[in-house]
Length: 124
Image 1 (spheres, rainbow, N blue to C red):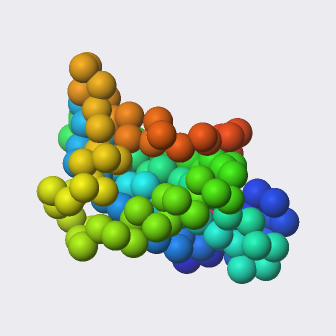
Image 2: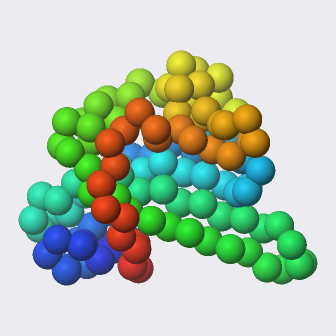
Image 3: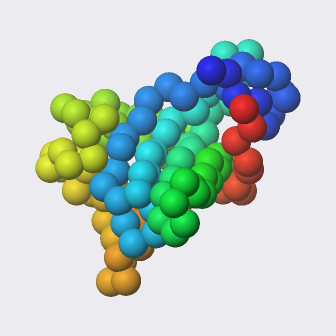
């Protein structure tokens, strides 16, 4: 599935790699993603969060992209590649421990070591 690139506005933005995180006190699913455009070479970071809490059959989805320096994207890309089980939120590897951090209230804060820029909506 191609997404709308925020740089060139073509449907050529793809999820290159991902890391499934454990749930927090807000979201049942949290996925960190590296995103890239095959047309204009844009790269960035995205976070997909889904919550199925509340009324039966209701879910809330937040899929946001972030501009990020290429160095930060590359460091994150290398870290995600080092995980032996990126689709397993229960993986106990060093990568999952680093990016799975939560604050004292139980809210996910795993990307605080990455300098994220402006947020943009991921458009399918």
